[in-house]
Amino acid sequence: MTGTDKARSLYFFPDRDVSEAALQAILLGTDREQKCWAISHMLRYAQWDDIWGYVSRDEVRELFSDLDLPDNLRQAWARMLKIEAPVG
Image (cartoon, rainbow, N blue to C red; front, top):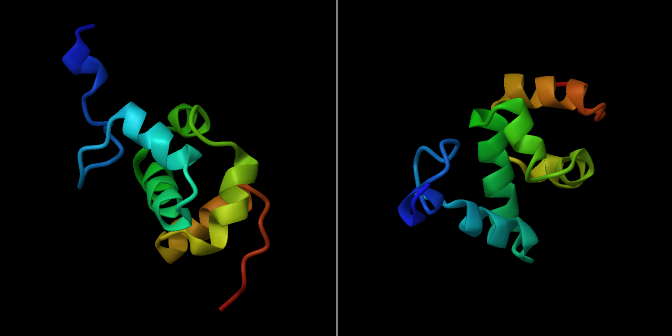
């Protein structure tokens, strides 16, 4: 693997170039909006094992109400994470 391969954009950010280092910085940072943006993308586009390599289920639960997910996906994730989702 070359240095440029390590810095390439992660596949689950189709609209922006985000490297693994940039994702780690976002997830370790204090900007809630950026964390929600990143986690929303992971829940939409990443494979199951890739998601949990970056965040824990508890971290997702903590930010869940602020994640940008379509209703059907939000409901599916709420079931998987055992989150009470408002009906309506």
